[in-house]
Image (cartoon, rainbow, N blue to C red; front, side, top):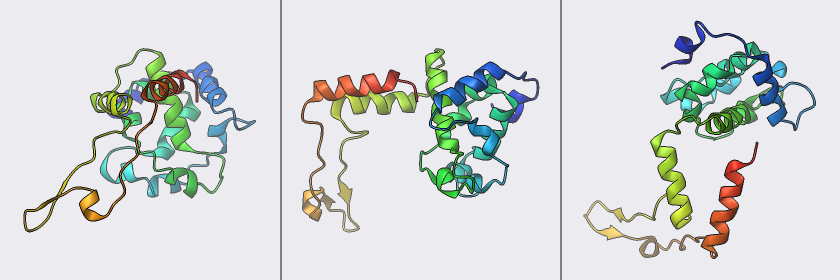
Length: 176
């Protein structure tokens, strides 16, 4: 469901907007108030090119206090965390990626279902220390090469898996 559909009948939730801004406490003032909707963040957004994510509209909806609509939308999960929105912002105080992380944390804290691919990645990180196992490459002449065959270094994994899992789990439940 798109954000437009969710916001057509949405009501403002000022207290949730304050919670988002509290989660982004690295700024003294309200983060979303710095945005003047120039859309430079959206013009560089990798997710916007392929999906419907428009970072400047997410900030605008935050300004309007339509938090539940954002938290319930699948669009917050499309962010690729490339941080281009932070780099491109002329205000340098608005980072839609930080707002999206805070919204994701709120969604998880309120018991919303996390998309399956995110859950799968987290399980893989917890079990092997990587999003996925290293892959072999098939060349044009149908020869299979591994990293070491190509002269690439081995990918390091966490030495102490139990400690890594504990730290990652702790980070997952902390606020932004």
